[in-house]
Image (cartoon, rainbow, N blue to C red; front, side):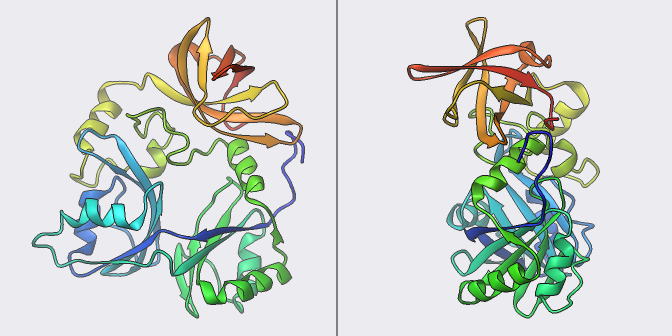
Length: 315
């Protein structure tokens, strides 16, 4: 794989046991719409929405993919938090609402097919089931629209006792099994952040990670953190921004490495990967480091790496 030429998809990735919950009940739609940043109120059955969990100050707590399974039901795949945390955090808001929360974490294996032709592979492996919707339940397998590398893709939530058989079916259908390092390289190259690896620090906002258009709705009504997020959107511009780094060196710096410009700290490096013959990374930087081509220094413990700032996605 070279930095300029993407690999030949589709790939099959095994993401292991997934943190998955369900919300069910007459008030589930209204409840979710008031908790998360995306518009759940108008989500059609079978549709999907990527969203953020934020506190009352608009700071990201975690991300999630939300799938409408029926008029009163939703499947939630969490990112950066687990089922116990989610139930403790959001269970306290269920007081008079008719909503039931169930944790399926530990029961379902998450497989992911990413790349051009992913839909055809999934369709063949599941016996001709058309993966046209954001969510579809096919013979006990949750088929979920989820693009993890900006090339198109699908996730499959399958009971762990059936995971081996489905892996084999997907491989026969044309998905090439690949290590998670390959997915990391694809994601970094595409400039797609993940939580919490690519956070900017203790206080991170959706605008800083370039997630504004993906996870936020500004006409859905009130939700936790809405006031701050709306104010940031209409009155101010973020002072930090997600950018790329091309790193010089033989070894990848560790996640959380400090980014410095002229001796001053201007940001934090998040995920890094070998992309072909290059080392590339995502980093949230202050304005003084936004210009493409800016030379910076990464520092961690007693080690340092020269790096060049790049816009995203990488060329």
